[in-house]
Length: 353
Image (cartoon, rainbow, N blue to C red; front, side):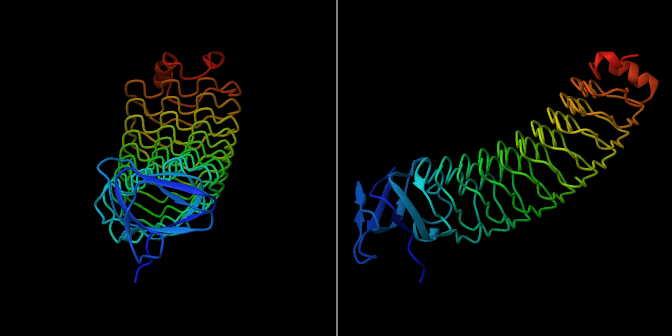
């Protein structure tokens, strides 16, 4: 028999719910419709038949833990779990079992968002995801130090979008084994995780629009990126702002693609002040804004890559090296292309010779 969904009071708690729900304080012997429940420190309550017409869920004063099977609270394909514990003082969710075999759009969207005292997250065993299913799930959980494993290999639009955005205590990112990505799937995933030091390997070779957009934006402690981003066929905006503001990043990943897409590398390393050497850029077929602002304000960049393309698209090099004040030699590139690039603030003025 499944363990009933349970709230365990760490301190005296008051519990309300933005919808209809039943509760029991005698281990399921009797059930009542919840109005407002006072749950003393050390006591527990079980809940079932949760129904809500909007995204409102629990309103809880006090500190508490949660455990039990989530499926005993409500059936799947509902919005019951959206923003479920938003801005509450849940501490330990490690024994909460998310036991649905298949997810649905927005299944756990924002579930623990702004839970600043959450220290342990539940396991996330699903291998096939749905649109926005984990989006914003742990946003601004500033006490969370360890992310749950993410074994999914079939992704969906926005599935991990902003999942750990603002988790300032997170030090290690989980492995991300998927090789085929979806639109916006990793967008803002670790944005503002200021204690994250290492990025996971990213083996995907099939990309989609905005898939890595701002993934590590302003991860100011990040020192190393994945060794390579292996995709050779890119998508519009795919790496846009991916490492922007990563002021401790010293090494960039290999970028083997030879055919680029609209804004694919735009502002990818913007303001990466510790980056001294740019990665090789073997691309020969460019796209509009593909390198726009890519190394802007990389103040310690001393060496630029060789640029092989003989034809450019509209503003493909726009502001590519703007603000790179330590760059002493102009990039090696065909003369005709270089003359075009000068008109687009391609490099610092002192290198235009």
